Length: 106
Image (tube, rainbow, N blue to C red; front, side, top):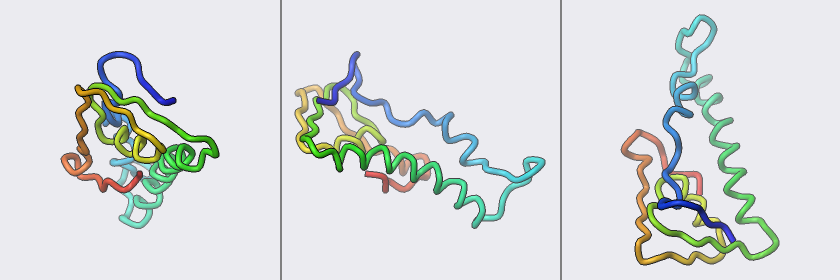
C-alpha cells in the first residue's frame, strides 16, 4: 500500500531539481546544442520513468491511498498502481504544461 503522511499525497516535482537539467550546458556554462541537451534531459526522464514503471511491473498488487493534493509526478505514480483509493478531499492536477514539460512519464 502506497500512502503519504501529512495533508498532501504528492506536491509534484521540486522545480529546483530541474534547474541543472533545463540549463544543461557544456564546458564553461555555454549552452549545449539541442541534440546534446536532449540527451542530458532524457537520462533524467528515463530514471523517473523507471521509478514509475517499477510500481507497474510489481508482481504483487500495488494499492495507493490518495488524500489531499496529488500533483504532477504524483499523478504519474498513481496511474502505475493497480488500485487507487481516494478520499473525498483528494484533488488531482497535471501541472507539467504550465512549466513547459510534456506529461509523458506515467
